[in-house]
Image (cartoon, rainbow, N blue to C red; front, side, top):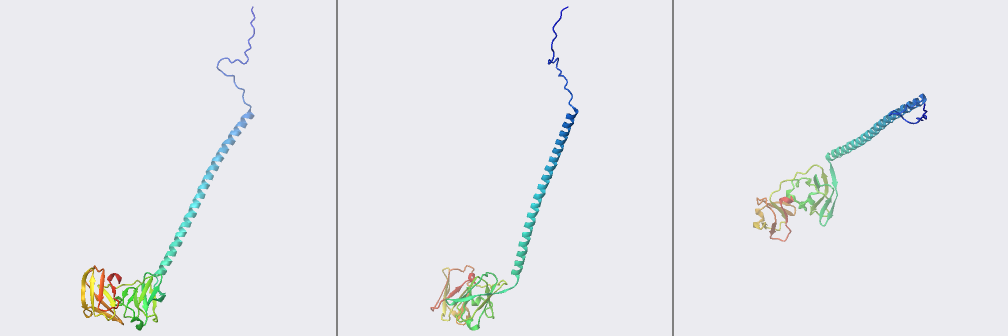
Length: 255
């Protein structure tokens, strides 16, 4: 009987099956479960913390927006209130003094007012020397023959030819001025002229016309003449007389 040597099969795998792994100790398994459970709790905690932080950020942003909205709303309310108060004050009817000074033979009155009515008061004797107020001839001022003379307000108002010794008081009334509708051409001069020639745009309108034929109004040493050529195209107006005294000319655009 033949004897064969015994084969050492240790470490050699027969077939495709792996040798079964030895079971893990129960202690190691429990530790693994505890670790996994702890990680899950940490993940849940982190998720909860992240959501909470996001919510807090949103609340802070909302709070900032509401504060901004409140500040803007309050600012608008304050500005609107100030505007309404100022507007209400401006709507009050007031009379405000305007300072005047005599400059080169005329009174100049300066103020910050460009709206309303300028009221002028002086003595009848001083009024005899005035032929215009702010480029409006005395004849075209409806209130000229009353105690107070009224014209449209302006920042600079000139009164010609009041004497330096005259006392003139000027005040501004906040009520709007209602102007008169002046028609035709008006000119102011002295009584030395006895006839006039008027030329408008190269066309002779008055040809050495006697002063008695023309409507006139006197004020002291001045006399105002008015003639209506019945045309709206009044420009380039020239008027001459038979004396050397100055002739002050006014058209509807100046009154």
